[in-house]
Length: 420
Length: 153
Image (cartoon, rainbow over all chains, first blue to last red; front, side, top):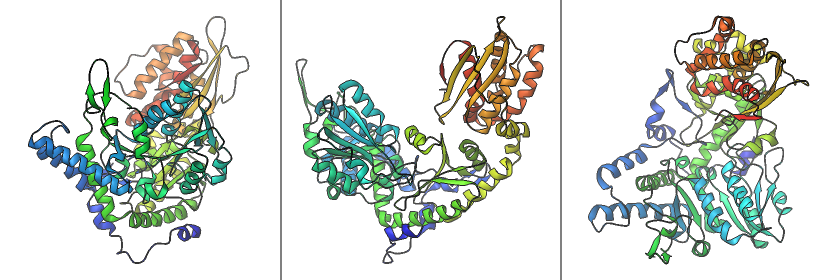
């Protein structure tokens, strides 16, 4: 794992990461499960929430709640200010050029579906090509298949290497005159691989194609600068970023979002409505029909504040230590296979044991308080490529410790005890 | 650990590691493919019914967790020699047992079979695992009904 340290050398200038203080911010980490201390290693599925986010939700509902963008009264204006203020926090977090390039969605899945339905349906024609990769989550596969069935577009799949990488050449060899969009993960939720997105974006742009990044995993582990990347669309969910569920984000370049028709119709997204014709509101409201997830958006703003205060570089370094410890400890476990071994990966380790199915592993370690995911992780095509119908997966968040990794390894000993 | 031993009883571990009737039936009269979308596990159940509707042979192919493989293995042993109606009824009773849906009346001719299935009763403590235990049975029922595909969702 020496290569991993070389890739992202921890900076010594920062104050040491105060993990005890961080953990104290997460009330749920104090609870027990089956009488055992909770060891939560499933943040890639959904992260736990800091007190700052929980308190924000409570405060909004207790003090500052009303519908947004409507009432000419104090509370509605206050709620609107906070709701739009959160958008501005997210804008800064992503370094987007404009606040209105941040579109609230329900989750990452809806953000991708918005692009497929609005951009895809209107700007892609039969025979146009969308390139995805073999390691995509179902949410970045199925929307393009729906579009293929409706419009006759072609979906091409960039292959992964045995280490779980998507080399830029694998994308390059699929790019042709009909390529219109490259839609790939920034980071794999199963293998932890961070894709060479800067190169992919340059390559796609040189061919006249747009790029959508599924940032649901990456957004929690590394700093994302959408302007530096020059990415066209960036999608992520709030609940993986220590925010509430029910809120997600689509970043899109202004010119693209402006050219795109609405995704859904309803209140809040119109300028004028008559029975003959309606006109659309300006960005971002054009894409936010109906009463949005108000408190959740404000809660996501609090989560962005929380993560920003810790600093994604510091979080990344902390998680890298967990990853190195986890890779070392787990690869020493007898009969254990790790899926995804590229040095350029972040805090996710998928594995299998020779003696037990991932479901059995998960059930057994759960009794020791250790929460890990087992299954296909919404990546059935990737599972086929790996030749494993399912894997067990531990994933790290900013609150995990090396002791918790050790607790997982100890609990795996019980699996061996039972299954021999 | 005791709770886990109750779930992973020796019989389950044995059938999970050394499943009986793990093969395709070339002369099957019906078969079906079952999948558990929750975990991606899938298996195929093959049945050979004689002209009187009695299960002459039963087998399965597939991979899965210890619970699903053990349940499939036990099922192929238990439904052999049963009528189609008895096989369906056994599933119904087993479903009650696995889901922990209270006391049930069991016809005497299925009492021994249901008794052997008691080893799987531990899954009732683990709601998400009930589907593992019943996947093969759903698939068997689908095969009997002439369906080719079945999903536990």
